[in-house]
Image 1 (cartoon, rainbow, N blue to C red):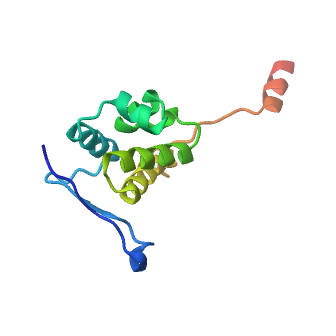
Image 2 (cartoon, rainbow, N blue to C red):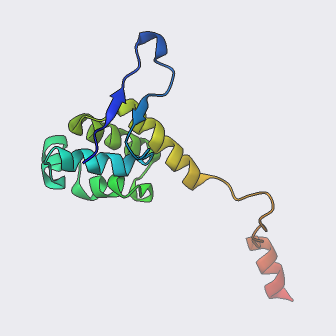
Length: 129
């Protein structure tokens, strides 16, 4: 099992991202949280009982599947609570989850063809013809 070395920002560094280092350079919050949970001997059921977060959401965080959350704010908040409970930097987890969510919501590349959508008015005009 690898050790997580987490650095919390001091008062002067509060606006900068937290630092996390692992022996393999993992940069996925879900993987880090799962490994920390397993290293602590916790099950998802234990974390759910302690944090009052549904096991379904905890499993989604570990799998980095944020589409099941109503809003990014819930995913970030739940991930921070999860991190606090297993001893991982909340700041780092929040930063990584934000990046992962932003990557999922990113607009398509400029070169990608745009889908053409017909308006209701155009459809009605076509029906009359």
